[in-house]
Image 1 (cartoon, rainbow, N blue to C red):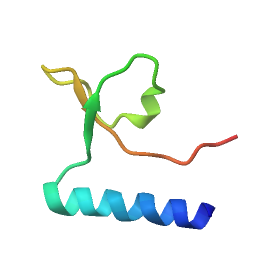
Image 2 (image 1 turned 135 degrees about the vertical axis):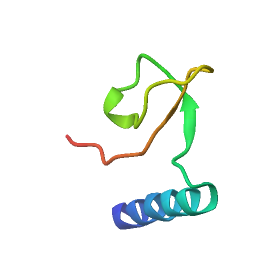
Image 3 (image 1 turned 30 degrees about the vertical axis):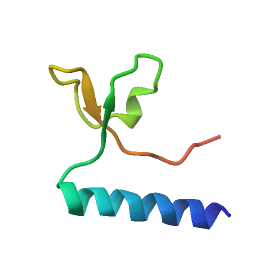
Image 4 (image 1 turned 90 degrees about the horizontal axis):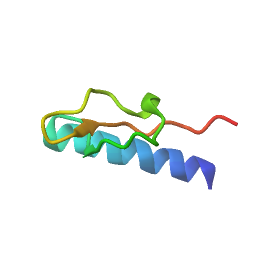
Length: 56
């Protein structure tokens, strides 16, 4: 199941990057670990993000 999850994340990221030329954008949230964000917030307070594997 873990391999499937990683594969799906990779496919979705590749699709978004190929289709739109960027990573997905989400509203900035101060409660989210900033390591997920790939940019500073824009004028509408959206940031580019990329999912990463959770390290326990």
